[in-house]
Length: 230
Image (cartoon, rainbow, N blue to C red; front, side):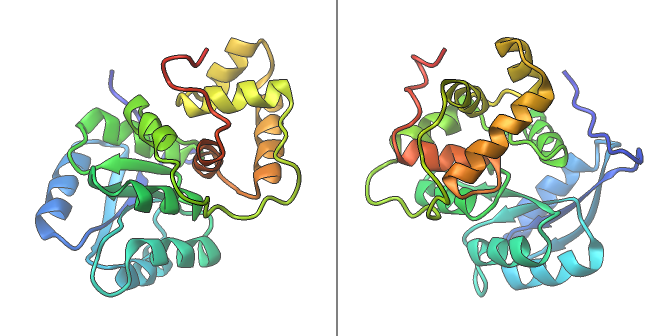
């Protein structure tokens, strides 16, 4: 299946690639430039350059490495969340960086990609980020669920962590990577109601994104094992 990344103005999705390894940036650019609905507007080799370019290039999505010299990706995400919250950040990292991945999701990143991910997963994740949604593969969700050792470093929730039965169902479906319309169809409710439940979950968890909510829920044991979900 080919993913088309559309915007309300039918213009290409503007993507900024951030990684300190030139070969990674070039590889991603080669892949993305084969997709007509994506425009690679720039590259950055560290977090500081990424923040600077974000202000001038106005990307819709940033693919952000986490381990970089100078300003790292986590610090850059925090700056971007504060100064350019409209930009969707997708973490770009390797298999042995689970703790950094969790911190990045809690800091506001909209998604997570491994550097050896396939082309279609890359495009699907960017498409989800463009829609303001999060697409996490089952493998990544499983890693989030098992990576719960140590105290949670998530933001303090503004209210109770107790979820209603329907909110729990919506959260578990979101953790499986389902889109709002898919959750609505599964539960027999409207997309607007799904969005309302997600907003309530975010408020209870003290977060502002689906990825961060999943990370917090996983750390606090609120999600079932992947093989028993649904």
